[in-house]
Length: 168
Image (tube, rainbow, N blue to C red; front, side, top):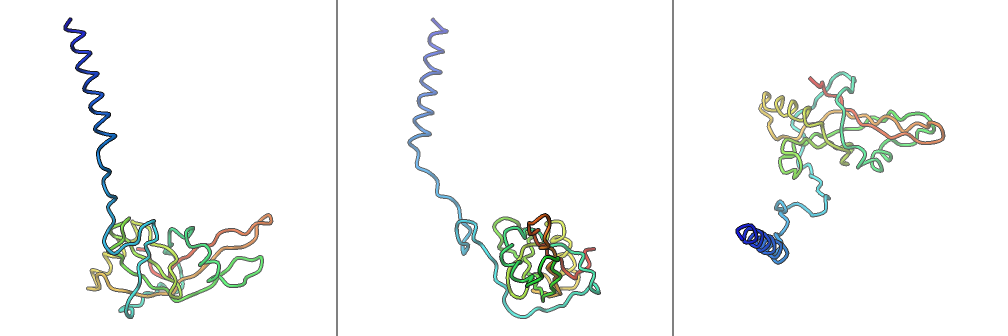
């Protein structure tokens, strides 16, 4: 008898739980204020850069996320035939405090066009350098290079972007 009563209580609890889950109002998806929906967030640099970086043309600091910007980067690479591109452009580095995906993000622009972000580890180190120079949150500049895009076995390879900023 006690076993049957326990089974009835468990079944009733499960039925109530299922009904609650099916009939509860759906929570509205949280959107950061001022950010477009659907992953279309792009920061906008404002003003003039307050500092110019240079690592004497070494271009060792890599930009990530270029796959999302390959069309833009391909245009910036210019015409280079079957060989790899090596196109240098003015770059802007924008500490992106409003990025909904990464709280310490640093956005990268070449010739005024978004091309990706610094890797999280590099972004933190870059922000620390800005802080040491009393430039926290400020727009800075350097040169950037678009490389790649050469032909291999009949297919065009992807492009990459590197910056003339000492990565250390």
